[in-house]
Length: 283
Image 1: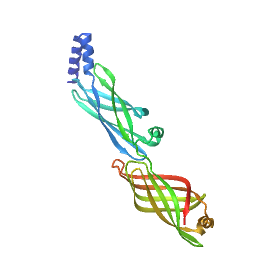
Image 2 (image 1 turned 45 degrees about the horizontal axis):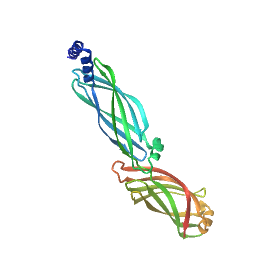
Image 3 (image 1 turned 30 degrees about the vertical axis):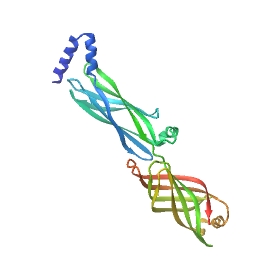
């Protein structure tokens, strides 16, 4: 059946004039359309763009997709470009679809994200070229393009606002770490768990893990209070002098923050943080 259809097509083309031949060849070229582009997954670290591409074959014989090239641009700058092998047969006078997944890390687009400033979305353009083998035409690269916007989730930051001294003794102290969680996003954050290591003036003081129920509003700051017990035998008598003095201290705060984002596209998150700065003591 395929050979007879190919011979019939060849006969039509041979009996036609040059103008008719060119018109017939153009008419026989498959159409490539990007039906949709959507987020397959997104987090504070990475995103995946999925493009659904449809190939319409107007020929009385099947055609074959060999692969495609792609160029994903964000804010007009090329981010991902390359080519992939993808074998697919499209039957005579039929259509078939393929899914094109493209994943990237936000760390790789730090400069682009910085250039868009405070915008919560970024423009993208996806250009594709599909290599399709068409009888009488040979292999043709057929282009398709789509564009839209992607959300830009921004990392929240954790800092030590101050250390509140609740009770001071000769061997130790009870205190509260007042942490600030800054959320630059247009959605809120529900915090579930915090793991931390705190060093003060270069000396390791505390480490721990806290379960919590706290909310950080969109474009806002949330406060997290962590009660701690300081043991001078462990962290040194210098801690006593610091707690009874008037100077601020330098700290290093590292850890992990878990919770759920108020945007269904992100869902649960698990973020490492590392912050250095200066803080004071409230007595």
